[in-house]
Image 1 (cartoon, rainbow, N blue to C red):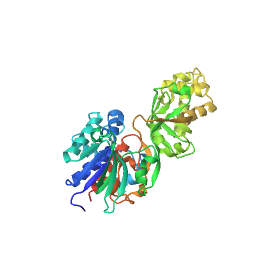
Image 2 (cartoon, one colour):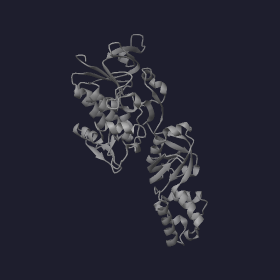
Image 3 (cartoon, rainbow, N blue to C red):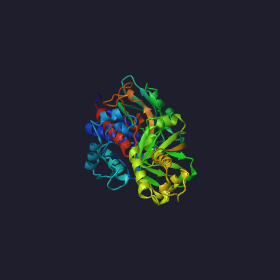
Image 4 (cartoon, one colour):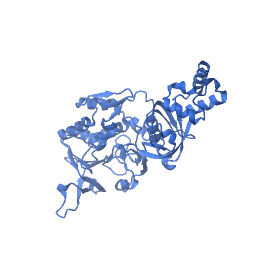
Length: 422
């Protein structure tokens, strides 16, 4: 090992900062530099959680990590032995950021401001002596004979322009390099990594809303169903949680989670699939049937419009009545067995045609990236290129909404930081 390790962290996001901080804490004499292609660091952290920064989750009730990590759950289970959500909670509180756990188990800074997290990371990195360079875009990596890695940067910082006003190209040598650049929408963006012998899983969007071409449904814009279920018939893909009707179709955790679990399937089908919605979140048909029969028995003279099964939102219930071809002034006592079965099916297995996807605000998440078979499962070092490490969404790890993606960034970043100085 050289007298002084020179370490490059490529990507000034959550994983990059955590890797740099962990490395510098473990080996203070190491020279650690974060390179970010944009003008500011931690831009994605700034917008996550609507600007409040949903930095992790309590994981309460998560019995199997595959429920929240459609890709990478086995690796995350292993890495959690080194740094998990409890460690994350403790780390930020020890570093001056009080946290709060919401009723939905999402964790936010007490300030409800993402800048609390950003300031903590930037100030901690600078205090430890980590260098931060913006306007540096990595364009190539070359393995040298002495086992060092040569990095080629395109420098766009005005202070580094040459006399002709052209972007300068820089070549730098490092003993260790961590790639923490996040997800990319196109496989070509991984070319400098793939060229070193890494398999790249095709990137596709993983958190998005559904376009539904049902004008009557979209007329319910703003309606929220707190406990809904969604699924793709004929597959194992399903999700649950709040569902929001929008002016373009459907959103909310029940939809975003489904889009994550079924990301590749949806991409392969050009985002044109049938989905089923369970409006009441109850999958036991006997329970639903009993509820409907009770309503019929106890309210025979009341109109359908006046009694809402499972306390459904009024506008949604009126929409479903119309969708079943029933008159809202029809009496519950006039509902025969056949119509009761239609009602039960509509409540629990209501079909819709998805006609495309929408973006999930600015929080672009992809599945795909560096195949996990390419990295050491304990250290995240490349098997193809010694002294090269990966952390964050550049790996084929992604999660459902709720703070799980950022937790993956903290965990993988910490593990890389611990091992990149060894």
